[in-house]
Amino acid sequence: MPFIYKKRLINLTINGDNYEVLTYPNKTLLEVLREDLKLTGTKEACDSGECGTCTILLNGKPVRSCLILAIEAEGKEIITIEGIGKGTELHPIQQAFIEHGAIQCGYCSPGMILTAKALLDENPSPTEEEIKIAISGNLCRCTGYNKIVKAIESLSSERKEHSYGRT
Amino acid sequence: MRLPYFDVIKITNISELLENLGKEDANVKILAGGTDLIPRLRYRLLSPSLLLSIKELTELKGINQNSSFLEIGAVTTLKELISSPIVSSHFKAVKEAAESVAAPPIWNMATVGGNICQDTRCLFYNQSPFWRKEHPPCKKAGGEKCLVIGKGQKCFSVYQGDLAPALMAFNSKIEIIKNKSTKTIEIEDIFSGRGDAPLSLSLNEFLSKIFIPFAGKCQVGSAYEKLRLRKALDYPLISVAAVLLYDKESNVLDLNLGYSGVGPKPFLLKKSIEFNKRINEFPSDLIKDITAEVLKKSQMVNNLFVPATYRREMIPIFTKKAIDRAWKQLNSNF
Image (cartoon, rainbow over all chains, first blue to last red; front, side, top):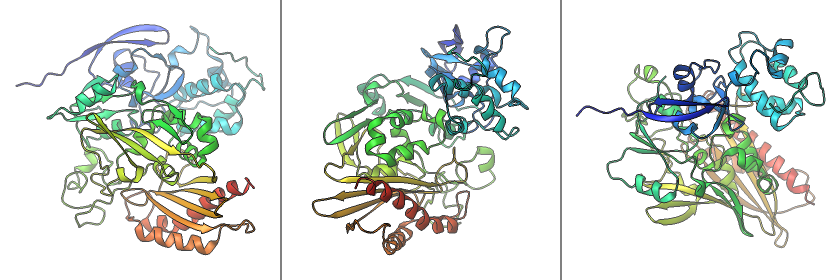
């Protein structure tokens, strides 16, 4: 008897939009984002939940999309890096990263920026230690992390270099 | 790497879970946070045909308390555990252990039950199929012998869970559900001591709740220390949870030490001594006796990122670090 690989129709809410996706149950959210929906801002690197390049926001919390099955993300609000700007206008975190030299190759940046967004949404005035703990799950081989921490610090509501609101 | 094909059922209540676990010819695995299972599936270390996703099983979520113990649902996330004021104030070592796991995005996904029930690990086992095909299968992968020591019937893969030693040091119990019955056991009893089959759970049993007893009239000091190469992301190379419980009436100090990263299962060491408020430091000769006992019980080989000799040397150092911090917290109560 030939084995039957069955697909399922699922609905995903991504960056405020609804997507109907026909996919296999063993597909991860990362694979569906990148391959089915061509939202390639979220990156694939280690595939084991360590590096953080696949980080997206699920109901506002940073999670590893390489470890979540796409069908498990139904009914949840998914935010990817594509969803945080407004058209051609960069999000304040993206602007701060550019101004502080916190992006070199850019591969860690989507995950890093979303983790920073989740931190600042929950804690608008994080200390340097709190920032380092929050981004401890996002690896960067280029920058040495210093400028990334400075960029996030500049958005602290106490510093007021940028106006950062809950967007 | 792609995951192997499997079907998924989203479980919404315990009866549905039991019904699907109980099917005779089912090749079934429970999927909670997925932070341990999904990487192992990717490496083709196991190939279930069906996953039971319990992420939305609200019956097994949440932290509740009564006058005697704290009750934690197995599907409670590490983030919920870390954020709990009761865990922070009464079970500091448990909070420190949870905070030492991986990184914040993993805390949002990983569950307490999953962290306890995680599989054992070894440099020769947790590798891709491409890597492993260059060697005969190890004992844990269904082969005949351990590839680390090159002989023997024993698997030396390492239990590297962070929560278990801290929960054991607090004398925790767990509830196991099978068919329609439940049983409550000491948390140590879930670990078989066999690297190739680390849990003493049959196919249709699952861990549902964790109970941590309050210290009652005892004063408490606790701490968790973890040997790791990086400050985040790493599993413990060895780790120690120290819980000091002082009973003022009898003037007895109970010392509970939970260890992880020291063999195929975590273990607990218990000592009772007469308390002396005047001494500033925990007696060093007692730490020497304790670590001699730990080294005798531990089964470490060269299957992690640092040699076993180094990990053995670190046991007395990390034991002292954990006890010193627990002692400091206890003494701050006086």
